[in-house]
Image 1 (cartoon, rainbow, N blue to C red):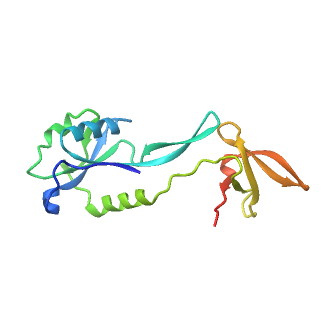
Image 2 (image 1 turned 120 degrees about the vertical axis):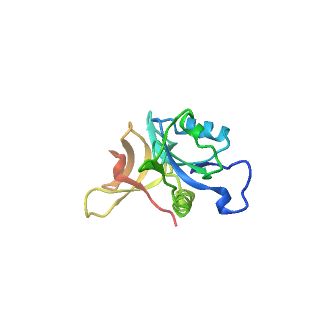
Image 3 (image 1 turned 90 degrees about the horizontal axis):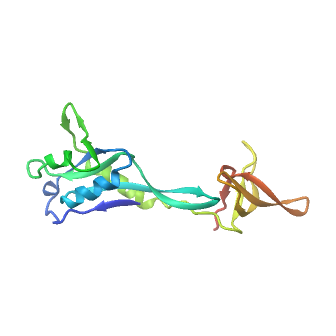
Length: 181
């Protein structure tokens, strides 16, 4: 998942499109910087990934920056006025080496975009999901059935023990959703 805002006019050639540059933002102000840069007509790429979080025993998804405190902005050397970028709300600075901003190669941005498109967000567990419970290093996994969350780091699962189904509390990190063919 990513937030990618296009510039108002579509350029005819790659040279007219400009090159990508890296911007450092103030902490947790990437979205603010993106909004203000878009309002100024800049093309901004803000890569984000879905992250599972557990809140009050319920798993949900939220988007977090792939590169915290950084955005990519497309600029055209000699055409775009770069000076407003320094005073844009949320922007700390244009990343430079030796005092000069260096462009990020197009294939790197393309690779990031492709990876984000392929990344499937982790699925939350629901009652009845078949799980694999890893009991230790080098041991085979035990099949279990998800029942409910028990706090932020534990889950209740059903295990077939001694010919009976038993509810057992285990660490969330020990279970993995079983792939269905």
